[in-house]
Length: 102
Length: 224
Image 1 (spheres, one colour):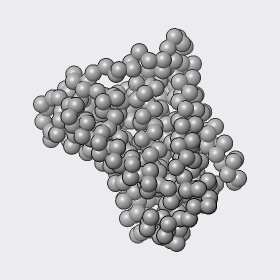
Image 2 (cartoon, helix red, strand yellow):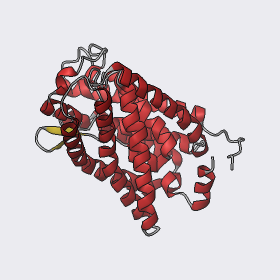
Image 3 (cartoon, helix red, strand yellow):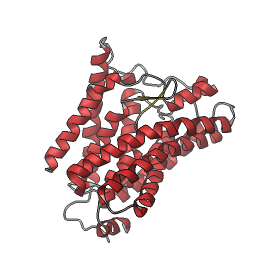
Image 4 (cartoon, helix red, strand yellow):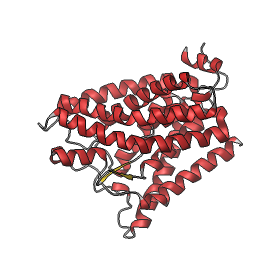
């Protein structure tokens, strides 16, 4: 498979998972949260400083339809992660002229 | 396993933030040899895919869910240094954009998931790979076992942090038992996803997979 085809397929798969499949994710507490509830230290948790943020808890503020809200937040997250991480890794990579220190 | 603010006191959180920062700095240096113009975009894609799959909580046991951590997956695909960076980017974006994981607890979470789970998972991967026949399927199996164990490893990191600086007084052994048990179950889901994700990349672009490269390439990388 060509590099470009491979990267685009992976990106589309990520968009699909975060944008569409995410709606069907379990909303039960995660492992740590459940343990904290069962044992009792959940009480010590504080609200997140960005809990009123635009995309807090993987939803878009003001969008009532939860399928749309979660999906849009997922798509935004995938694009943001893709752009920031790819940019960062390209920035710190070994440049083509640079010798691999052996 | 994104830790909210408040579970662990601020001095402990600050200490782990310092360790996390040092780990990230070392990883930036260490990842250079594994990242070239071909593998750097794969590293970006790995972070992106992990972000997406982390949204997909699957049910485990009664009333509990778990999602992919991605530490072993990333370590096998792009090497442990770049994996540390990929998971760290995901955790920072989740905390800043989506209010998932407390800001003051970010160093704690980075320590558990980007450092502990990645390096423990990578160590397990190398050990299993060594005793398996030199086949593609062995890479997927070794990655899956590494994934299974990397999740309780990250959970053990939390228990350590709880033991040092919890803002609660519940027994450490109770927290340990509950954390490891629950996260072993989540690790099974982690193993399944990792097995198939590594298999898919091996099937399409095995040349890009860090954990599958030939011995010479690995020697080059190790000595850096």
